[in-house]
Length: 263
Image 1 (tube, rainbow, N blue to C red):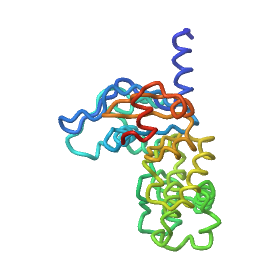
Image 2 (tube, helix red, strand yellow):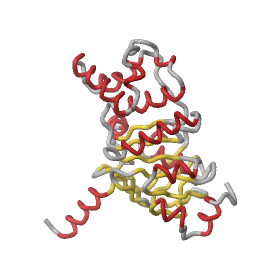
Image 3 (spheres, one colour):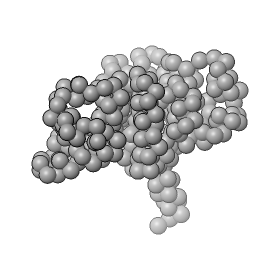
């Protein structure tokens, strides 16, 4: 095997996602401009920046959620392993199995707690009751929710508290065995206790998954992430390990944002 190919494989193994000259447009609006990011495996990466800076748009390009919006266009490459996410032949269903997403507002399905978790695995061909039972329990345990709901699995998920619903949604994502978990401000609607529980989960889950989280909360980014990207006006101004971003930013705009001078 050639040295060049070995180096290429090494890069693919080290990074869960690589973007190359990624551009995104809402109609004529150029919302993402030349995004080149290498996001490490089994790390939590925070995306920070003021409202409208492109961080959520970037997050949604990673599992093609922006495809659901009319009059949009993506250019450049998003590489997950050997997959180019923007390949027109990419199976979006398979992509979203590998790249799960937790949204700002918890969105449990209007069905039982059990069926919320079993829904995805059933779609992907898992039918055995014993297998589903085991998967439901393991997913709820991974989301630190099992002990709270194990006796009410047949009840509607809509009866759970906001924090419980968000952890249920996380368990639903985990049930289909993703490689990458995207989180778009997952704690913005939660109380402090529920926020702490979800942050603790992020710290635990990044041992097994690659996590990318959009957050407006600077303290949260500092607490849970290994690396941080600062977005402004559709561009990545600075990307580094989180400690460096918050204690010794290279760019003045980064420093102004994290110290509260704007945004």
